[in-house]
Length: 277
Image (tube, rainbow, N blue to C red):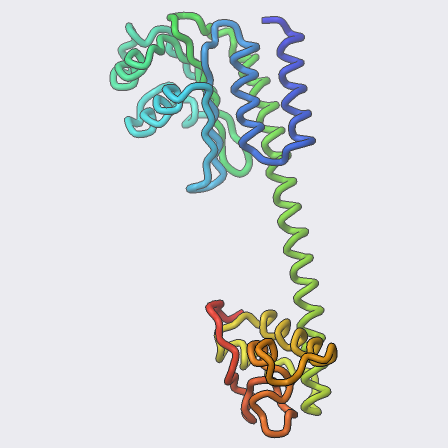
């Protein structure tokens, strides 16, 4: 194996994480790099687990993907052994190996004569890298250090994509929470002004409408803010948009209560498929 080829392949994996923050393309690049840089390797597969039932499985050939899956159905094979103990498992010749009869029968049927597997931890979860060859003894046991290096690089690249996606999701949740808070506060202000109540009572009115109509609290607040905005923009009372949202005063005699609510604050007009907050 030429060291510069392996370095180039591993560098390409790192570069990919800078432009694509999804795990699947990174895993595809890993198995492709293994086939290109490891002598005697005709195909490779990679499993990643991150808690049940989350798993990524990629392979350079569909037959190898099926062989991987059969290992877990049979509970027999080098991948099972490597994953269980986070070590390397080697089958030099599937045709003459007597330790894994069920796996070897299927492997020979798929044209696989040599296997080398490496299980490795990745927090949270684990990974399994498997190399396959069409001829016996093509994958040597002394490839273990190279396999460990590839697995280490793959683990770092995958964790980077996971961390990026988690940070992105957290930022989006914070943005939505901030926007929801602004809308709810604005709706509370509208109710306080219309009903002459304090902030706690205004929030309680919103909450009761949300629960009664089985609509998310932020949705109730947004509808109230929208209807007030329409009224200020000159949308006539009684129009379709006015009736759908329940503009201030609609459904009340004096127009001094929460839109669509009776005097006890129970919702009369808001209905939806969403659940309560």
